[in-house]
Image (cartoon, rainbow, N blue to C red; front, side):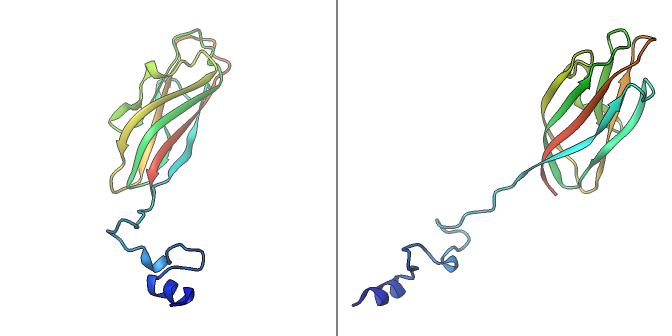
Amino acid sequence: MDASRLMNRMNLTDNGGLNKNDLVENTAFYKAPTPQLKFLKLGTVTIADPSGTEKDLGILPKSCFVTQLICVVDTAFDSGGGDTLVIGIAGAEDVLMAAEDISLGRVGGYAKVVAFATGETDLTVKSKWTGKGDDALTGSAAVYAVYFGA
């Protein structure tokens, strides 16, 4: 038997690999699609936002699973120390990041591993910055989500 007939009989390609039709679900050769992590900037909190007031920060898509939240303090908040920021949703203001997860008085990145599923509808993420001093002039922090899904 010549090589070309043997290759056809074994259902191999010219380079010795399997044909795409050989990859059948539930076989040892099937490779399930790998879910991809996505990175989304939810929004920015600044010193100009009213202290102690909940703000709509951004939207997480439906049917996604959040694995991490990141807060990057670009400009330190200077209202006299003790400034706090919480990130959450309606009815659970610090479910994603609590005040102790972020140091607003220091420039830097703060990350928190979470396990949060959004459900069947888009979900609004909310923030609440609370200034403790009277002479607030500067402060800015961007918030990002890392998630699987939609």
